[in-house]
Length: 116
Length: 109
Image 1 (spheres, each protein chain N blue to C red):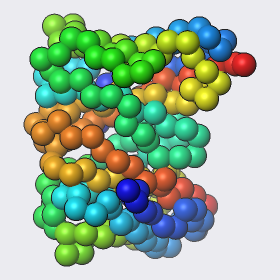
Image 2 (image 1 turned 135 degrees about the vertical axis):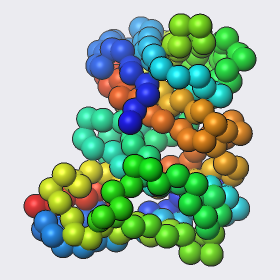
Image 3 (image 1 turned 60 degrees about the vertical axis):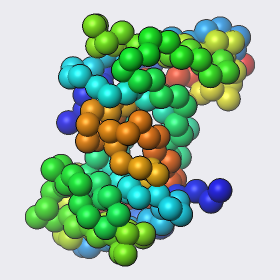
């Protein structure tokens, strides 16, 4: 089966600029996740969608980060304006069902963001 | 916030040896999962153990779960150079999957 697709693979921007990441989950997967992984740390959940509704965005810095899931399929994550501390790998994942139902997550390769 | 804490943070072994990684967590869980991440890549799911299970095997992997101690271990037997990666435990409650800090495993040929 096709995996979770993410683009771009790498992005370098200056602080205060804006950036957007795109994710196409596995076909038929209801739940989509965005994680932020800072170098040397484990992934931190930013936002979780079930179909096109938000399940959890408690750790999303809403003053600068936004995300949407179009028609319950593709998703975009935007940062505006970016800060130096946003430098990280942004991982998208999807699962067939929702968390709490013993589902495994399938991850994309991530977008590595460097903010200069 | 990250619930899981892995130990050790880094582990170096020779090919053929066994590697053991431990994960401790704080709150009650529905299941615990282990993932592998090769450098510069996304995470790959290895194994899921439910809260009512104590041990699970998959190939060269053996996972144990002790809910009374809120801890889990991942054993990789007969390690290979290709096992070199970071390994993360992730705990699932009722609504989200939270990842630990990871163990970096280096297997020398």
